[in-house]
Length: 212
Image 1 (cartoon, rainbow, N blue to C red):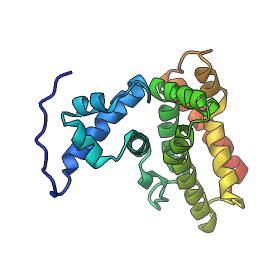
Image 2 (tube, rainbow, N blue to C red):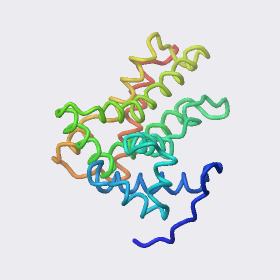
Image 3 (cartoon, rainbow, N blue to C red):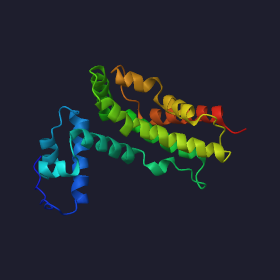
Image 4 (spheres, helix red, strand yellow):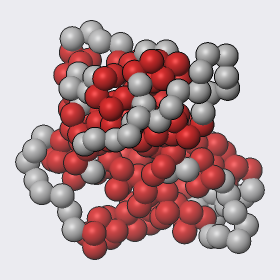
């Protein structure tokens, strides 16, 4: 794909947020499509329509760009505001919204391929899997813990251990389906089946932690 190269902002000038966004979008596209090793900084720069020097001026190295791309993808799918309790929205609906976003994220072809790559790198002793975990899964875990902590304080749920409860919630959502997909032993569920699975998981979770 050919893009017109955006002009450099010049030394000493403030970094252009539009260029940063373009670089992140290009990084998400290439990292998800070609993996970490298959995505060079040259290719990301070309996809973003900027020079490689501009990429390095916004992101110090490829590892940092990868981490920021993972954060951006998770924020895109599950914004931080999604983990806020809203008095105008039922807790069940909030959990359903989070569940659907999480299910779509983890069961996407790109996410599955990225997780397989991270598992392979972990066996090689690479530090990238830990960076990936901190940037993505851990962020979601902490967001869910905070939501459950607030739900307990408000009396909407009874959660003595938000960390454990958050683990239970995400594990219910993953179910056997995500494992089979990771192993390449099944086809992705239909949108209807995926939505039903999320409803079932939320129902089980609420029965386990309801206040009464």
